[in-house]
Structure formats: structure tokens, C-alpha cells
Image (cartoon, rainbow, N blue to C red; front, side, top):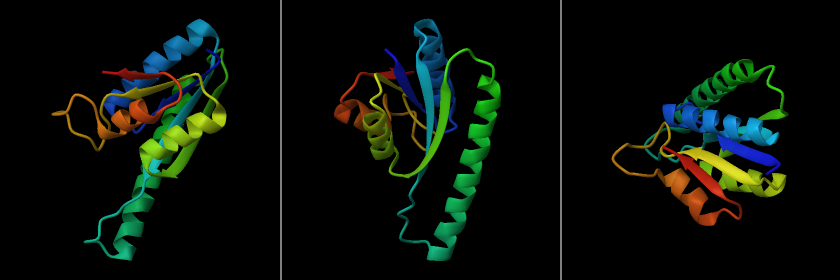
Length: 139
């Protein structure tokens, strides 16, 4: 297992997934890529200007979160990359995993915008269903 991709959206569940992915990467001397996806907004009730303002806030939050993660992981003895993409989270996770030819995807059981009433979030479920490589869902 040489390449591990962990999806992070700023939620507590994704923090747990990051800790687990880091643990695995360190134990196997694997590279680790931390991926954050800024979701596209399809809310028809919003004007284009409002949608753009919300998207900018989400981008800023994502960038700040990734900087926090980058600082917390500095000095680790493995290669760590940080990526931010925009679009459908499940699609971008799967697309990135395919392009990078990762050996494992690690994701939280439910995300920042998900709900705890379901055992597994819709993003995680899609990643599990369509991934060509193993997926570890951390609860």
C-alpha cells in the first residue's frame, strides 16, 4: 500500500479518518494525500450572487482548514500532499483516487453536511460503491 487518499471536509468524522489514514501511512511508509472538496451549490432558491458568496465562504473555510491540517502534519516522516477540488464530493474523491492510482481511500462515516441518523453518509456510500480500490470508512 504505497498511496493513501483521505477525504477531509472539516468534520469530526473526517478528523478521525485523517488520524487513521496517518496511522496506516506511517506504519506502511506510504504517501498520504489529504483531499478537500468544496461542494457545488445547486440551491435554486438562491440568486447567483448569493450562491457565489456562499461558495466563497466555503472555499475560505476549506483553505483555512487545510492550512490547519498542513501545520499539524508538518514534520511527519512521510510524503504528504494537500489538494482542494471543487464539485461533487464523491465524484471528486473517486476521480482523484483514479488519477493518482491510490491503493486505499479513507473517509469519515458522515460528513460536515451529513446527518448522524444514517449509519453511513451519502458521500461515503457513493465512494464505497464506485471505488476501484479498497475504501476504509472510519466511524
